[in-house]
Image: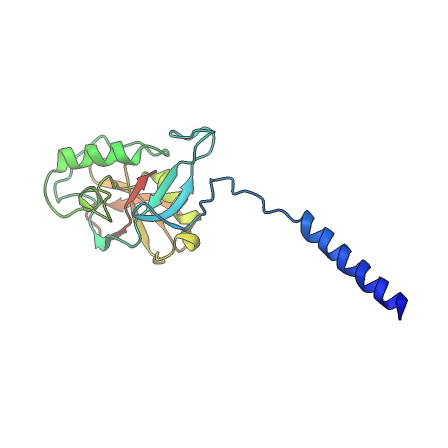
Length: 190
């Protein structure tokens, strides 16, 4: 009987010592996680060294709108023109969107939908560049709500064609006429 009692105490002490050694590791992003609701949308991407906006002591990245802004809208307002929105890299979607909206003006089209979006109190939404759109594709399951269809980027190729991405395969392509109806998901930075 005495041996069973000591054995029970030993097992209890070993269990306590193992529990005391367990430690939660801190999130590398200040407690934020991909797909989490945050600042008007869902966290879609965390900036890494080399990305514009990256700061080693702060957490910054991209937020995707909580749902699609359109399930079929054209890239332009119906007037084919070169807008100069040719940048493809992370951090360039906003400047691309401003170029498009400045030259295209009023009308229902992809960049204007994003530019006019108000989600919560946030009004700084834009159409993602090619590389920003690819981050949405790569993290689509965490973000949620994407269709297995094509999504516009803000990156144009010429007066008639712009880049888009197939969310069923991940393939990016430029062989799509700006007048084609394609899905749109706005983003913003935090």
